[in-house]
Length: 322
Image (cartoon, rainbow, N blue to C red; front, side, top):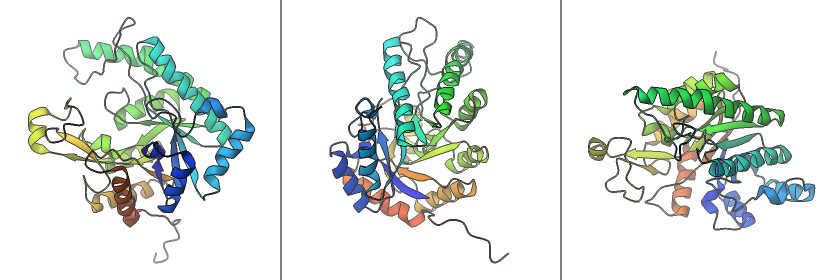
């Protein structure tokens, strides 16, 4: 495995300065935001697409430092019921796929998106209860009329360009659990898989190790985010895990994102890395830092130090003792 970072963490730095800092920190890979929510601070596809000179220079900036690009990321909601918003996210995703092909990057990370509840809706609707039955009707309509048709077409577009789509299992979007991931994958094909981020699983009550075993057995993990989550049980008891308070209200929230090792112990992270190895994932573990208690630099360096204790880097050899 290789250790990387989602470079939006260093959006305040110019690209080459960020790359120097990342390399000096001992990392192997970078995941670069190219649109949608992550923005385009380090890479605007419109400035690179079709220009082989700029494509070559961008690759050289990364590779000359001994780094690789693990993925391009354009997280958004291409299923948003407001067509202009959906089109903006969709266009960013398509450009990300095109750029990944030209840069020879194998993965584009994004979200599944979430539609509204009917054709005239203005806002997404995320059903989370089977009753009253209205929610079941909404969910059925969303999957049959919006989610599967959109991703069937988009997955075909990506497959033609030899790019895999890694959907982050994030609350608020239609694909947010291992089961919904596999529902979509079975409908649209193996081009679609997970960008598996344990932080979004823990607050839903999902064990990341079991999620890795379930998805990994099907070859459905295309990328991996390293981010932690802590839960405050006294606040969970008041607000539940679907706590809608702002992330800035850290004292009262039921859960919050933490840097690696500050939500769950190193043994838990060792189990996660071992599970990835067990299912054959030998790609990049990409640090994502959204810890409200730590600066960019401190949260990042602590994640690097903690992951270096448990990351399995070497290729698996023969079991010489067998």
